[in-house]
Length: 360
Ligand code: AR6
Image (cartoon, rainbow, N blue to C red; front, side):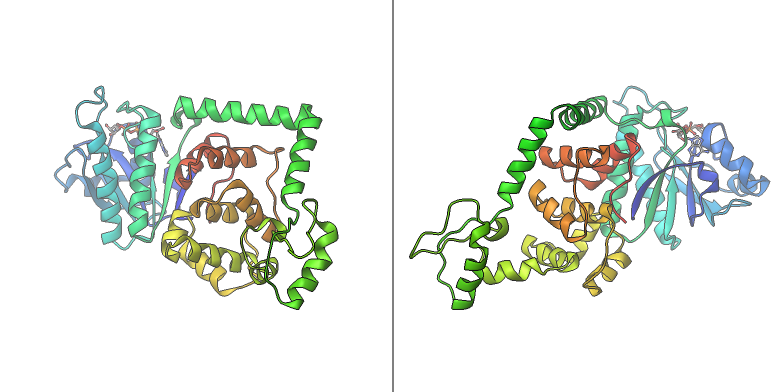
């Protein structure tokens, strides 16, 4: 997964580089800076002393002393002074400079703390959004695995409005699922009806007519009329019967590649938008019978901006379904209904609700 949010102590991360939230002197301090210097030992401070400090919004790189990583990137975030002192611009610049330094040093994996969100007082929800937006923008251009490391629960906040909107959406749907069986039965019945063949006019070969006739007894409405065979096979509108038959046998991987073609996206655009690792995508591409995890399927459905019904279709190919009995599925449904297909924003919310993240 190119961008991951994890709960951990950054000093134990086994990555090529960790980022330190430092100050302009680069000579150590409290917070994560203190933890990193304590874990790295005196060699880190000795090297930092040779650097001549660092400007706010920028970063410098050193070795890592006794830490399990190879490098420490010391980034100096802005102190929060109300928001009108270029804080946002400086914080973005911290992330960009750090990522560039990591790239120049051929790092394949980097872990960031939420820079400026502790002693420097940057509002946590805004600091998190800047981190996610800036890192994901970088990952569209470059191959790297980046972790945002959250040390304590309090350090992690999504916007209050988003949190309460999702919380009430979850509440509503849990209620509907668990207390109103009639409503749920109606929903299932409607879904069943929508999945049934409806027949509309088609000029077809005798094989197709035979096939259509075989399925006619299953049609709910309307019945085929004499002289004008009707078709809408398994909910697929305006497709030829040939296409419909082909799609019934389609595997997940084939469906994915077809959907990417239909969307006009390149493969790379799609797997990056899905927060899926390039190597995993090649595996899926070359194995027609690849069995993906549910989070992988949904990540692709989000990247392809599929509707809820299309997402269900894609999930079915891999043997999964969405249900109202778990939070993860309801949160996904919430974002699809909102038309918000930003996988990183969805992950922000999933993490806030302690759910698995999208991607692989
Ligand atoms: N692992 C991951 N994250 C951590 C850890 C850890 N071990 N410890 C703290 N955090 P802060 P700043 C989180 O205060 O706001 C220092 O004195 C913490 O919960 O470390 O950029 C420097 O020398 C918070 O979310 O950095 C500067 O003077 C985030 O790391 C000043 O503090 C950043 O909090 C920099 O302040």
